[in-house]
Amino acid sequence: MSNIAGKAYAMNVITPIRWYTAWLNKLIFWVALQRPATLKGLITLSLIHYARWVIIGRDQFPHVHPSQPRETLKYSYMLFFSNFNGSWDQYVDSFTFAIPSGLDMFWKWNVRYSKSVSLTPFHKYIRYNQLDTLHYYNAYPLATSNDVKSARIVKAKLLDFDSATRDASDDDFAKQYRTLLRDLQHDLGDMYPTPIVSMSAYQVERRQRWHEGQLDGSKH
Amino acid sequence: MGNLSGNAYALTVLSPIKPGIIADEQIAYADKVRSILQGWNGLPNSPMTAVPQTYLCRYFVLDNVYTESQPGGSAPDTLNDWLPVVPDWLRRAAMPAHDQLKSRYLVFSANVYVGPSGDIAPYLRGMWQAIRKEVESIWQYCYGFDEVKDADGFAAYIQRCALPASLFFVGSNDEPLPEQLKALYIKQQFARFAVDNQGLPTATLRQNFQAFMKQIAPHELATPTWEPGKYRLP
Image: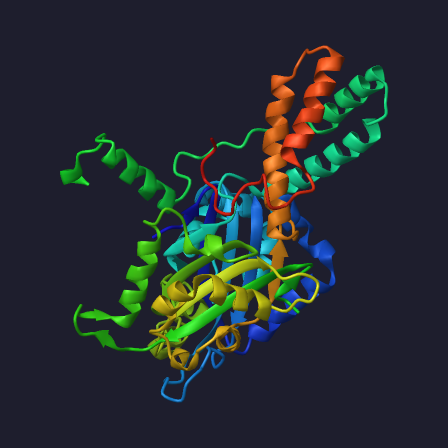
């Protein structure tokens, strides 16, 4: 199991939804797509890299070969995949505290959805319907979603500064350099590895320590 | 299309796993897939580092669907408590039904850069070209994969197993991965530069800055930069 890759956590949740109300959920998502303002709450949760909702109709599970038995399900299903920074509790709680009504709007047609408030039944609901990831890959385990966003700003401002000061006097250079640092205060910062950057990184470093004789091989 | 948000694409794949057993190992195909994927966690880094334009991705095996466990508590339950004449079958009819999948599924979910075309096929062909051996090692146990012989066949097969996203939210950004990695490299280096060059005379600072810009080569995406999956700093 590997729900963690660096600073990202992979959440998978699968929940049943009555086949005759699944279209309502699809409609809600469609409206959210047409009116991006409805996603403003999600944008405030800056700890999210990427998230998605997928609704599988009860007769829409992939059927790719004649020898494969067709599914005969009573419910349709909603899959939720998220990539976020921080711990499970921080993430689930931030949903409850920041966008409870938005969350309820997306899940309200799911069978026995507990509502996002109060917290304990909601935790139980997510925990019960969550599936663990076997292998999780992150192209930038050292970075958070905010790091990725701010890196883009740092790069752009640095290039602007470089071209604007190429022919400037020393005094002007110093002044603009200070302005640059002040502008970037919110975006600069060292990125350090977390204690366990990924399960694979953990395994590699454990093996390395084992080779260096720091671990007792018979016990690991 | 729900799969696309700007230049980023949400790929959701459910490939049905055949119900066979590997005789030598006495292990079901689905468990073999699980074991191989677990094995990837012990490698120096994920095979997916070689697949261009992959931001984040995950694999797991879906054994079955879930039925929410919370017992009772619906209106007929309460009525049944108050009025014993409310029949038990009515109370039970409101309980969640039990579902059972007939196949287990290999789930592959990826967030990738596809560019303005919105076409996922080039990404999938790139995946086949980069890690064909690893792809075959897990997908060989899935229905219909026997017919996959090349990159085009793989792209077509995966698209048959793919499901459309109803909503895809990009909280990060949708730049090409090499752009993101270069920007992260620059951010890290510049943060250190700013700390190391505090309080210097302007002439020295300027000289150091020019040397710094030359060293980081901001317009060169290939190098110096962070390689995909980099998890340690020097």
